[in-house]
Every structure is written in structure tokens, then in C-alpha cells.
Amino acid sequence: MALRDLGDKVRWPQKKNDGYFKKKDPSQWCAYHEDFGHITEDCKMLRREISTLLAKGYLTELLGRKKAKDVEGLDFSKPKSTQKADSPPANAKVINTISGGSEVCGTTYSAAKRLATQSKADKGERSVKKASISDSDIISFEEDFDDIMEPHHDGLVITPFIANHYVRRILIDNGSSVNIIKMETLRRKDISEEDINGKASPLIGFSGETKYTVGEIRLPVYVGGMNSMHKLCVVDSLPGCNIILGRPWIHEMKAVPSTYHQCVKLPTPWGVVTVKGDQQEARECYTSSMKSAAKPILQ
Image 1 (cartoon, one colour):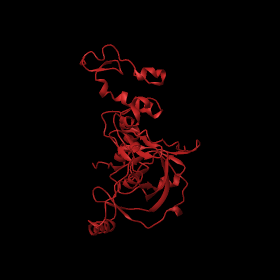
Image 2 (cartoon, rainbow, N blue to C red; image 1 turned 30 degrees about the vertical axis):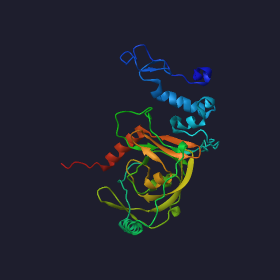
Image 3 (cartoon, helix red, strand yellow; image 1 turned 45 degrees about the vertical axis):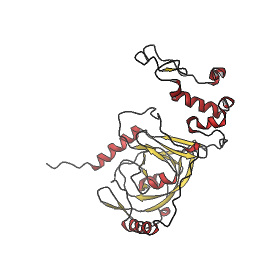
Image 4 (cartoon, rainbow, N blue to C red; image 1 turned 90 degrees about the vertical axis):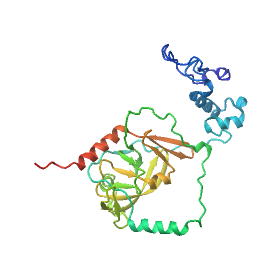
């Protein structure tokens, strides 16, 4: 009744056809949908709508601040930030696919050994720092299946804004311990090789193969309204994709990628932002990497 009193401020669900709930349990009635299928108390769409109305200042006199905090896990007693994300320039250039190369990931043996030794020495001496997450930063993938082609086992490929260019075919890979960029991608960005710092270092692949980097470079990466500098290892070749954003980027951004839901979510000053993946690009990346690995059959 309180929702009806708000009139057109409420988004009401569309009516299903007459046969939609034909085989449903008649005891499962939802007052919000005005149809059978589930009870009102379990209606997720209703909870989301109430959350939206509370955020706009409605229904607070009915539910109160304490109860409002429990709806969808959102705390409406705290004011929302009015800060908005800046958008990239309208005339930004786009870098499309680059093919060829071999897959690389990993870290050096000496660095890994030093880290393991240090961790062992510090064990029991340092307190564990717990991440501080507010109610508005809680990340959930509930019912995030819009426009997903199923069944699938696609990688997560996005198109972020990096160093004044949109760069397509960026693979989000939590199996990579480094961020990687292909030399040809830098050339197409008109970035000089003189900007590459550091000595060559080895990257260890899945089957133990070793590939040496050209060096390292720091570039601004714009994702979900957040613009931040990140270190990327430069390599001569990379299969199927232009850049790999690995665990260093994922952890620094506090991002949560999901290949199943084909999106990556990250907390920002204006709330949790969702960046959708491109399944078609992911499949083309896979095809390109397989093509580059194919060898001719000897007769």
C-alpha cells in the first residue's frame, strides 16, 4: 500500500502472460508482481525497488533508518558521495587487436625465493591487516546475467582507456602475477621506447618456458571512472590480446573479476562500479592465440 501511494515513482514489474505461472504453486503469491511464483517476502525485485526508493528519500518514515540499513545490505544513514566519474575525451583514439606471440606469466625465481624467506621470518611477528569495507562497497554478483551468451567458458576481456587510447582485447587474468603489455601496443600509442625503464627480467609460463621482458613502463589505466598509474612489463609478443591485467592491477584496485558473470566489479568513491566483458572479443582472442600456436603438419 505504501508503494501504491507513491504512484509513478515506483517501477512496477511487467505482467507475465496468462500461462507463465500456470504450473506454479498457487500458495506462492507475490503482492508486488500480483501473480504466483514466490511469496512477497522472498521477492528480490521488490527488495531492490525498496532500496532504490530509500536511496531517493522515500519510505524512510515507514521503515526507519535502522531497517533501511538491512535492505539489500545498504546503509542509507550515510550520505552518498556526489562525486562523479570523469569520462575520457570524445575524440579518443581506439587501438584494435594485435595478434601473434606466446603466452607468458609468472615471476622470477630469485624474487619468489626472497619473498618466501621474508614471509617465513615475519610469520607470527606481524599483525594481519583486515580490509575495511563499508556497506556500500559490498560486491555481489546476484542475477548479473544480462546479455550473457550461455553456455560459455570465455575469458574476461574488456576495453579500458589506457594512456589516451581505448585499447581493445584487454584480458583480466588473476592467474598472472604481472601486468603485461605488448611492444607493438606502445608503438601504436606513439609511446617512445625511451620511456621503457629497467632491465630485462624473466617471465615463467604455465609449462615452465621462460621469456624475457623488454623492460617496464608505468601507464595510466582508466577503468570504471577510476584513473590510476600501473606498472606493466613490456614483451615483444602476446597471443590474441593487447594487454594482460594481472593480480597487481586486480589487488591494487580491490577489483573482483568473474569470468562466469563476464564482468569485473570494483569499489569507487561513488559506489561499486560494474565493467562488462565482451564475449565476442574473448572468443576472438582465444581463436587468435590458438592460431598462433598452430604448427603445420609434416607430410
